Length: 252
Ligand SMILES: [Zn+2]
Image (cartoon, rainbow, N blue to C red; front, top):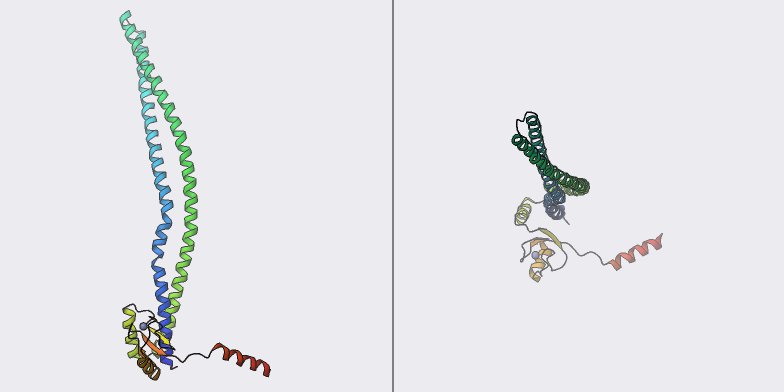
């Protein structure tokens, strides 16, 4: 087989590998994105818990301030009681103190309830944090695998391009132009070798006369898919090769 035909068939093979691996490479960003979903979910859950914790802290602070205010009131009423002039004033001050004490009792009960909620929440938070740590670890591990896969694909692509460039000058420019047109139309592989009257690209039968012409000229195009077809004499049947190796072995 002439060198130029060998070269274009070699390029065609490389382009086929390139096409497969470029398609695989296109799926990598989506794979990376999907890996982040479980972590993002836990992150959102954590954010909600933290928000709730902040809310409870706020409520507790509010109530603590209220207790201080009421204690101040009691202090003032106590002072007033030292200076009361009559029974009426005494009763009024006493009433103020009682109300303040009742309020403090109510608010302190609320604080206790909130402290309980806070405790429950902090347990939820620590288990969510643990879940986050695990998910992140799993993600990092899977990310490494995807990065490895990406590296392998990029290496194959680089290798194929190198292989192509090595033989490109050996191809007949006219044939190469036709070949490039097919590649642009995404007919891959664009050049195939045939040994029988069937296209090795689209698997359709090639009319007998055309096949004869391809055998004669070594090159032609498939009437169905337009692929470049190159005739390659069928390889010797396996039986013949066996016999040969046997006789060789006998000679030795
Ligand atoms: Zn075809």
